[in-house]
Each structure stands twice: as C-alpha cells, then as structure tokens.
Image (cartoon, rainbow, N blue to C red; front, side, top):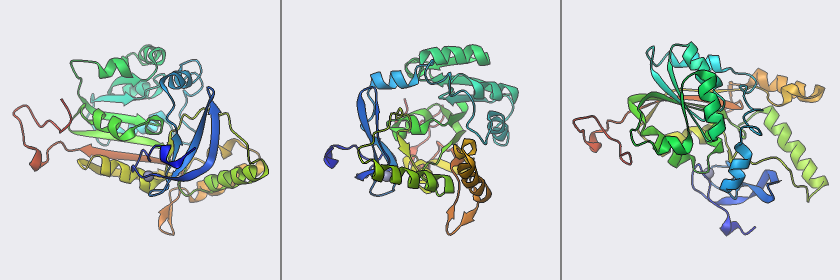
Length: 312
Ligand SMILES: [Zn+2]
C-alpha cells in the first residue's frame, strides 16, 4: 500500500511511518494494516472499515453477545460508583456505546438516571429492556430533533472503535449541560506494560518466521495508544475540558488467562501497573474524568446559557 494513500492518525492527524505490530489482518474479504503514527507513535488501522464491515463486526449476535462482561480487572459497579464523587443523586447519565446495558444497570443501582446509545439497533433495544431505561441506536439518537441534555456522558471502551474520535467527541459534548462531566475509560494498548512488550516481541518473531502471515481478527480497535497520547487527545480536541481525575492501571489481560509463562508476565505487569517509573506510568487501561466548561469569556453568554461553538 502506498504511504500517501494511508489515512492520517485519528488522534493527532500526523502521517504514518509504516506498518507495525499487529501488522495485517483480513476480515470480510478486506485487508487491514496497522500503521504507526510518525508524530505520536499511536497505531491505527487503515483503511477504515466500510459500513457493511462495521455492521458485520457489531451485529448483536456476533459482538455484544460475546462482549457483555467488563474487561478483566475492573467492574461496571466500580465505574458507576466513581461517578458519585462528581454527580448528585438522580443525575442523568448517558452511556454512549452502552452495549447490552451492563453499565446502564450499574448506574441505576447507584441512583442515577441511565440513558443508553448503541451502534447496533438490536443491541440498543435489548439494552433498554435489560436496564429498563431509554435507549437509542446511534443513527436514531443523532436524528432526535429535541436534543436531550445530560449531567454526565460515559464512554467505556468506545473511542478506539470510532473512525473519527475527535469529531464524535466534539459532537457528544453538545449534549452535556454546562459544567457537566465527561467520564472516559478504555484500553492503552501501546502503553508501557510487560504484557504489551511480550505480545509485541512474540508477534515480531512470528512475523520473521512467517513473513506473509495475515491475521483474521476483526479490526474492531481502530487505534491503539498510550496514556500520554490519549490524554493529549482529549485536551487538544476540546480545550474547554478541564481534567479532574486521570488514572492509569493494569489488568494483565489477556495474559491472566494464558499458560504459566504468560501468567508470570501478567503477574509482573500487575505488580508495576499504575506505578510511575522512569518518567512513565505503567498500565494497560486509563480512566479519565473531565468537567466541560462551556463558559469561556471569548465565546459570549446567551440568555438561555452558553452554547458551545459547533453545537446547534
Ligand atoms: Zn498520532
């Protein structure tokens, strides 16, 4: 593939420096390459899967029915509980990318008013019944003429699935009340971690032994990044986001479920996860809480409040 025809980094908009781990995968008869960003070193999938491939990747029966549990090492209840530090009881919280509704249920249990949005129509309907709350498919939600407003928006393991995370984030912030809370959590797949180093080393050996090897995993994660790059993405995408809390931690996944060697590597990773050593924080996941201050003096105030630029 010609480097000029490769899309730019979805986090910082710089160009590719070439193909990197995990290299190449073929799904739905299309070959996808993993490219490394020349500026921020994040890894991103090229090309972006087309709408038919997206539908195939996220149909409830093939995706959500197998991805309904929280990734190992954290729980929906912990995340919902964390929000209590920043929100009053009965606050209205949207879970964007709510899957089959596990986090929506956890929100209700903590006394919040949950509201779910999910890409797949069947999954959205199921989530609504599962958590007994209002849910919409992404298309339906974006087409609502009477735009709902929320005290908080949660994105759990969602950003890395988006072709253009910056524009989706900006658009979603339009649904937050002034001073509302953005709560984002997800994987850090190239952040310093013994599990990541081991996986990359094994992958490189495999590629030397079988140079033409093409994987068959669905390219669901459209980018892989580290803590520094992920935090920079939020603050550069929307300067009105004020960081309240930022945590990096380790789950050891997927090596916690491997053989003796992999479990030993996961053990070391868990030991140093979250620690700040040699100028970096080790870990494979992040959790960030931001407050969205609409009110910037330069933007002017209307009688009904402050409408951020780009929101109608
Ligand atoms: Zn980049």
